Length: 137
Image 1 (cartoon, rainbow, N blue to C red):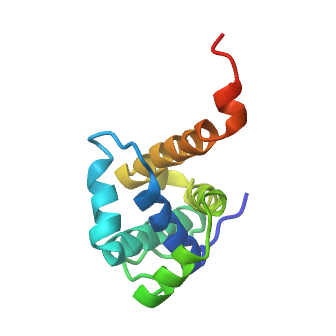
Image 2 (cartoon, rainbow, N blue to C red):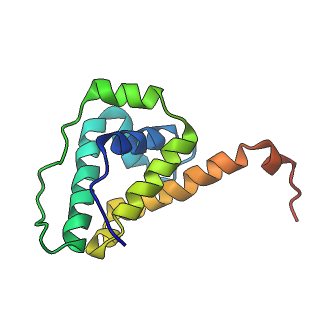
Image 3 (cartoon, helix red, strand yellow):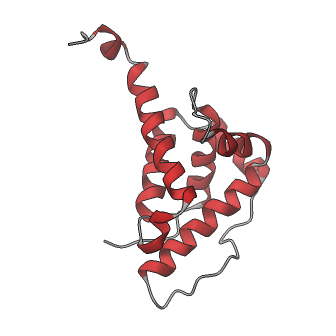
């Protein structure tokens, strides 16, 4: 398995997904609020988590808290307005996959993102007509 630094647009879609999830437990509310109110801070945290995972995977990649990308609010809005729920979910899945290395998976942020991934996937599925028409048995 190889790991890499995801594109900035992937991070923008992850943030957008977090803002779009309907139900969040109390433990997930702070990150949703951060995504809505200060997306640039969450962007930097996601970027650092990705870099940490890469440093865990590859010994020749030293860890640094310096982000790979600078947050661009205009680009964030552009990406958010030109995506859909399926792409957002796929981007989050890509991100968590790329961060599934060493100690990164033990971080609170990683665990929170996994919860968002499950919750958002269920949100999509439960909104489908086929799901609604299926029997509870």
